Image (cartoon, rainbow over all chains, first blue to last red; front, side, top):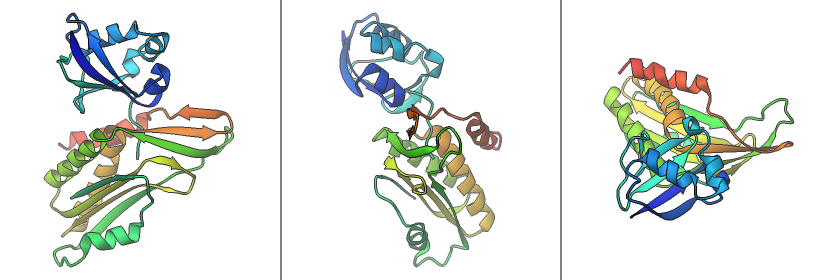
Length: 86
Length: 152
């Protein structure tokens, strides 16, 4: 098991129903793609949030990464749509 | 170099004056002020709420600002970005760059706002007559940011 801090923003947050959760992911979760597969099964809200993977942007420890980026104990993993500031 | 992410409004005139205060090596200050626009049609928007990722947002803005200083000879720069609920006509963002030469100031200012729009973690929620809606990222913004990648 590894404990991860998961953050959600914008419509990812409203679909999941929370902006942050601490999760204990099984050891089979090795990268962000694996984490998304596992998170998807947690609730109908999670499933809806991760339904369109191409629209999801990822940050690990506050740096942008791709879905093949590894995840390790204590990581902060954030999911959000493409940014729209400015 | 300075980055501020804040709920409060800012005064572009005061910010720009402060940027060049006491300096005699600055030949010009360029700036861009972003303002909440009322969309015509579709009922129009009554307000907008900006969400951000505290910590990462500041970090990304600092990285973008550092990149501008690598590319142009800048004497000073400032990025102020607001979050929270904003009404049409309110200021959202200020980018200001100061340099010995006007070209460096003007180009780096355009670069900063283009990159900020596609790289800084902010999300806009529009509230209109039809309810709330998250704003979609625009392809035109990606293209505007990409033109600076070619120059790298």
